[in-house]
Amino acid sequence: NAGVTQTPKFRILKIGQSMTLQCTQDMNHNYMYWYRQDPGMGLKLIYYSVGAGITDKGEVPNGYNVSRSTTEDFPLRLELAAPSQTSVYFCASSYPAHGPGRYEQYFGPGTRLTVT
Amino acid sequence: QKEVEQDPGPLSVPEGAIVSLNCTYSNSAFQYFMWYRQYSRKGPELLMYTYSSGNKEDGRFTAQVDKSSKYISLFIRDSQPSDSATYLCAMTEDSNYQLIWGAGTKLIIKP
Image: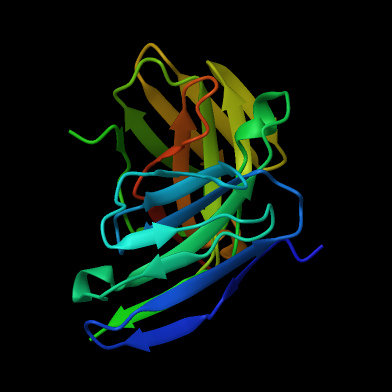
């Protein structure tokens, strides 16, 4: 299993440009998440999905959009990029089975985005 | 006030030392507590999880939860240079799959 994969690894955008960050998982997890991580700030939830066709906003959704047409894929769309969106973006997935380990999230390697 | 507070460090200790990493929280409904380890330029990975109060041990790592004080700790015994990473605490209520994260503590183990 590849686990959670993300593309691209790095990207530099100009202000006002748009892009899609790709995320795919091969573990048949129905929960998926997008986070951003800024230095010294921990992880902030942008959007999450509990299954194909179902998405909801997290703590910091402004400037982003998501879709979930399949169990495996959960792309994050940035429209009109701004310098405040410079960050490292992580995709994660989880499988809410029974037991205390059901909250474990599996992370991808991240996408480093710079907006200038 | 943040829901979860964690000192960002860095915390620098010599190899072989006992390390103590901590988080405090304000929501008394939190029941599940996790520690993730994040190496530089990598995604976080789960190190340990604990349900409610008490201790849990796994090799050189011990996770401790004190719900009365709203305080969780991760102890690392016989620390190794390979333990150098950022350690993030995360926690949640029962049946809530959105984790609340600490800022992460950067740990440096000097050979």
